[in-house]
Image 1 (cartoon, rainbow, N blue to C red):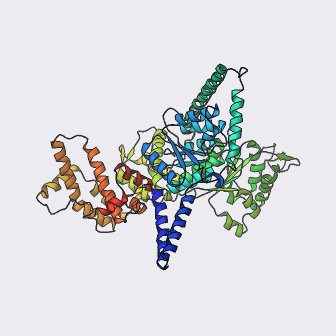
Image 2 (image 1 turned 90 degrees about the vertical axis):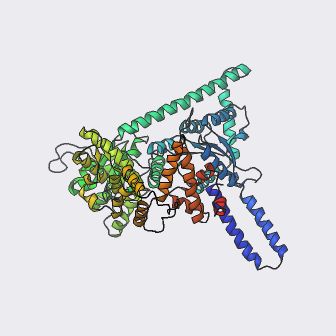
Image 3 (image 1 turned 180 degrees about the vertical axis):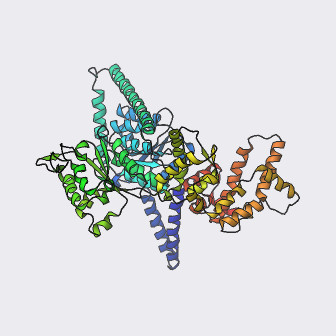
Length: 634
């Protein structure tokens, strides 16, 4: 029924096929039957997921919380097929009520789930507030948070509330199942988990001096409920404040919905509360300083200084004085004692950009600071001790520099505790429209001019461009367009010369696909008598070349004619909401064609349609279709 289920069946079918092939070589049919029975028994046992390989009669329980009915159905089927007992909730408030009953001992602690999977944005109580409350009262209960609003703030807030993992939508169902498995077996012994919760509940209930009376117990429960409710409302308000402050205090922004950026967001969320050293790698202009600043702003050190220093921008003979400071009279011109960047960043974060350009002699002194937090000012006799988190960044290959003898190997291993690579912009082209919109708005505000919109063809050229300067180059282009382009709409001819010279040839065909209605009507008048064109969507798609494919559709739009005629007749008969009628049928035709072309393989069909596998599965359920039915229709 679901994509994960299909893969599971596919694997089982393949295994079964292999078993049958082997079985055909065995003459004894009884042996084959026994083998099949044993395999079925093993499969049934394997399908039950338990906590730490506990007895199979008590499978692990998952609480699934999501207000999207279609997605909730798909996920429930997937996890049930994966061997879990699934209990679904339409909102976090209902799950919170049950957990609060367990906390107040109105229900047994055996009703606790082994893992919770929850969405973020839901009515009444959001997933972050729910996760924060659960983490405070059931700290051993793992929570996995999923959301379609997968930005940096959501990722960081998820981990700050104690979430085990963060899944940005759309996610692969196999990955989701693997994550839930890890969360279930994260605790060494679930039997040990229940005991602290029961004692905590008793301690909470016994806080009142009159715990012997029933009325006081009720009052205590009511008080705890109100306190918990107030807690999640406060957490929600804090999350909203964080969202507002994030938007206001981050002028450059870290924007991205691509899978590569989701990996970066998860890494920032996990690393923000850790004092560990981080090495950020990536090409120039990918936003390394923004990521370093985000790590600091969401860390416990956020109230202290964030000092950024570019090693490539400082003369080599001044780097030591810049980093470690100097004493009065240490060298010519040192008329006073001066603090270095390490002392200025004490208690906070020091960001060393382009660390690969640091002189070899300075690398030795930096190694001592990383080892014990001590250094000497230039010309100083007394050691200075500091507590500084180091975040380094480089666009160079430090391993190669180590081989060339230009970078200390021991310093490399000191810095390379956690490496965070940033993707270049050309590998996440789907983020370019959002980034362009953001930079155009900021440029308009900066230049005090009206906001300019990009023509779709111009945006298409920008998405196809290579962007060797990455996000910084895109920002500069948006500023250039705001100043140089005339009118409120940026046309193709308004783009900078470097973008026009590098544009792909097939972008010139785009206007043919979006021809005006008058041109389309003129074409219909010329070809009204031609009835030889079949209204088959696939009739003209007979080439793998995209340019030829586009030209064929523009020259002979038979299915567009049929659709226009249907819409005309429907409107003449007084029908309304014709888009709601046409869209499911249009999707049904395309789904059937793609599934038949792929032989019923959902992953291949999803790729043909440009969808994700989860989207295709949801569409099949909404349209009441199945891969098997579509194959038998032709």
